[in-house]
Structure formats: C-alpha cells, structure tokens
Image (cartoon, rainbow, N blue to C red; front, side, top):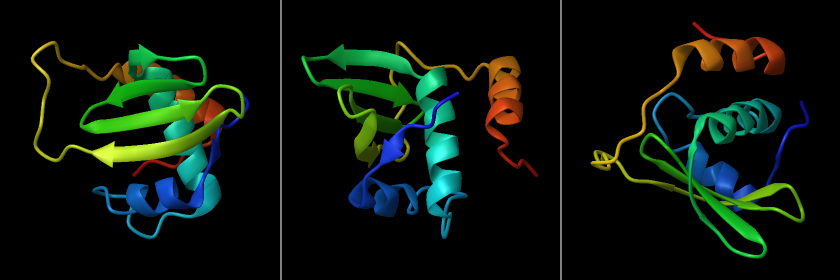
Length: 101
C-alpha cells in the first residue's frame, strides 16, 4: 500500500495526540495512512477529502495524495459515531509494518 504524504504542520499537530509524541516522519505517515483507511469520510470537494478517525479530523489533498491538515477534537465523540475495526486495524498494521505494544 502506498503511504500518504504528510506536510510538516500536520505532523506537528499529530505529535500532540496521545501516544504520538516524538513520532518520526515515516512512522507518522504509516499510522495516518492506516487511520485514513479506517476512517469515516465526512466531506469531499474537488481537491480535499475530510475524514474522521476517532477524535481526529484528517484532510487529504486528493491530487497530491497528501495529508494537509489535522485537528484533534479532544474528548469529543460524534453521536453517529466512529467505531474502530480492530481486525482491519490489525491487518493494516501488518501490511504497513506499524509497531504495536
């Protein structure tokens, strides 16, 4: 699977999320690519798709295959809900070589 690219400002925000403090660039790309695959698509325009993964909103530039924006809604859960698919997460972790503890 091809990794999504990641801009510097999105990486800095991702490093403020729980468990990702100090994460390296390549590991962040792996985890965020997985998260987008598991996320709910909220909105799509000509160039940007907005996804929701738990409390994380992720905007991806379709043309550049790049994560351009991240927002962490700490403590917020949408009533429509997002539920993590543990099986698919395991499969993607294996495929993307994401280390889990």
